[in-house]
Structure formats: structure tokens, C-alpha cells
Length: 85
Image 1 (tube, rainbow, N blue to C red):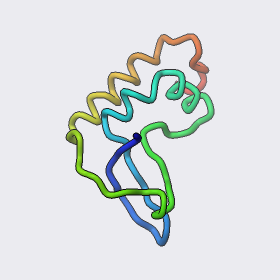
Image 2 (image 1 turned 60 degrees about the vertical axis):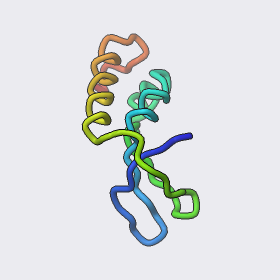
Image 3 (image 1 turned 30 degrees about the vertical axis):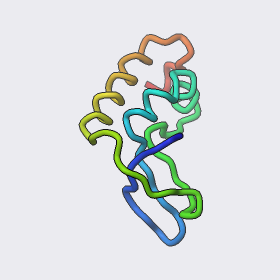
């Protein structure tokens, strides 16, 4: 499953930053598709009904390290629309 940290709650909406394990497992295809569609692949907005409480699997430092790694990895990927860099 996808897992992350709740960063904000607004009425019934929950803002989640994905954890490093989710980021690593989502795959470069999805990351590049999000980049090309100008979507943020590091976060998600869900209804409170769609979210379950769980324990953290990593640290915020782990999240940043994986996100940076994915950004560097996608730079030379031919699927990435160059105008989104």
C-alpha cells in the first residue's frame, strides 16, 4: 500500500506527503507521467474516509533522499517532456 505523512487537514480533505518507500515503489513511469502532466508526484489529496492511521515506516530525511534521487534519475529520461524541467 501507499503510505505517507499527513501534512494538513482541511474539512474532509487530507493532504499527504508520500513516504520514501511509496516514492521508490511508484516507478519512474508514473513519476514521469505526473511531471509531463504538471502533477505533483510527491503528494496526494484524499478524503478522510480514504485514509487509515498507521505507523511511520521511514524518516522525513529518507523521503527527501529518495525524492532527490528520483529527480536526478528522470533528468535524462527521454520520456520526460523537456519543457517541464
